[in-house]
Length: 299
Image 1 (cartoon, rainbow, N blue to C red):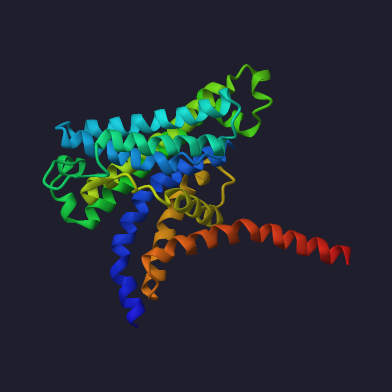
Image 2: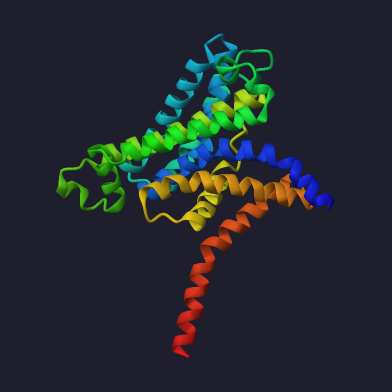
């Protein structure tokens, strides 16, 4: 009974967390699914957005402009990863690691210190309505509305000629040049867009929690990947709309599962281990099942 009571009180908090981190899951989905270019830059783009918006707001810039600047910085981070991957023929995962490593120094340079407090300073939520920061329900409504707009914009954009070309590059990068599609341009734009979304999420988190920190992105990639896998398992990805909705649905459920795990007495530090084991099991289960089936047939 105590477990259920604890879980019940955690639900509103983790629901808002799930909506916020759904942006990260969306940023993970774009390179992994639409572009077929595995990318780790989200781990660095998330704190970049939070650190940059914290530094800009502390310097007196309007929070809306600071959030836009954070998204723009995330786009540049994704573009850098793409160019390292394409121009220097470095594997996309290694290119992402290089970018993350460099961004850590950039974050420290931007803030001048490991973290920047924002308590008492204006933020995007207060600019929209001062009541938002006082209500988890209003925060959830705002984030849900932003996610709906994002999904609709992506759904529309991916049906345009540019979007179809980007999806074509992800489906068959070797065929793209034969169709007069500049795959380099679309990979740069795709990774840039994905990390712009992730950096914007970092900016939103920094403003909601009241500080930006260089270590705030630790584990974001694996959380986003876990949310994506859960969402795809629930609603599938046979259509574009389902693929775009999967990160949102998965993120909401993933953070509710996290709160349930905490309700049973596990420490928050245990969640990284649980998440890693979950992703590993999800990836490995189909392989093991296929081997077992092949073995039974051979026998």
